[in-house]
Image 1 (cartoon, rainbow, N blue to C red):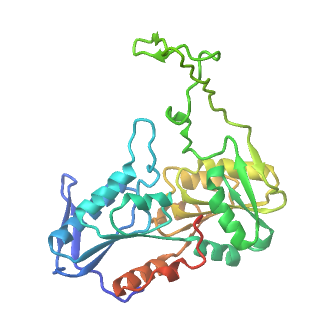
Image 2 (cartoon, rainbow, N blue to C red):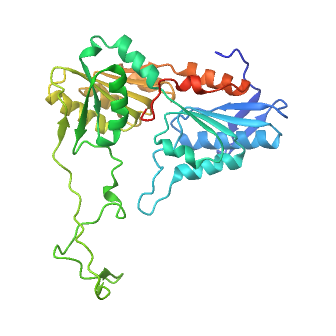
Image 3 (tube, rainbow, N blue to C red):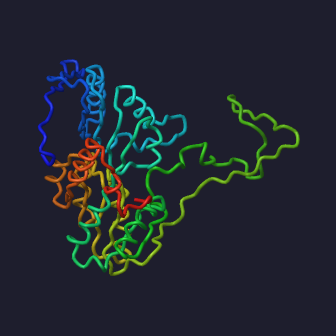
Length: 343
């Protein structure tokens, strides 16, 4: 609508056995095609639709196939977890194999994900829109403080705080994000049965094998969560928690309770992708959170009906401009002005 271009003629549907079928109704030979795919609750169906559509266009001799994926799915699975896999890398390879030649997305969970792809990725940022919302919609925002709900989110929060000329607070302890490596034995040593040192290597039978002569392994201390602390003064202030994804809201609700106890009189959550799964709307409505602000990268109309505290910021403008610039071969630098690496 913003670009004044009609949608291409195609049909995407599921067979009775839930197989995805795509039918392209017009010639795409030698053309540049943009596939716009938002990710609803049924993530895997959306991925299959994208893959099948891209492959259909590839086999129809399209020149360039560009995926516009505002929220990139499986982006939290971008690190090795115990004996799991890096699913985000797998998805990147599948998209390339299906025929995609370029991707436009927004606020990848980790910027290093761009390295998973064998083709260009434009990782747009929502921070200018969220910062504008803070300045225009939060009364007395000068009395606010930007909060990171875990040390891992501190860089993003610092970037917001510096541009808004506000203070910074970090929550540390039991309320840190659920992506902790504590369950991963390769990153977090397990509890040590014998604190005097290692007697040898563990065998499948439960017995221990004696170490090699002259080798003494250091004692591996188990991790322990520190007591909950808030680094920074939030008393009598508006607390604004910033993050990239809000899905299971348990951590955010716990953080809001802690900030309320420390004297914050209003609590806002600002996030790019509002997945808001399961009971998230109800938990937000019953919590100390005053408002949750997310962009429209993910459809969340149903959640808004369930919880009036959820507000939406429209980012379609920057996505439309990115499409226009790529189609015309223009520089994308304008879309990244005043954007820092930590956003």
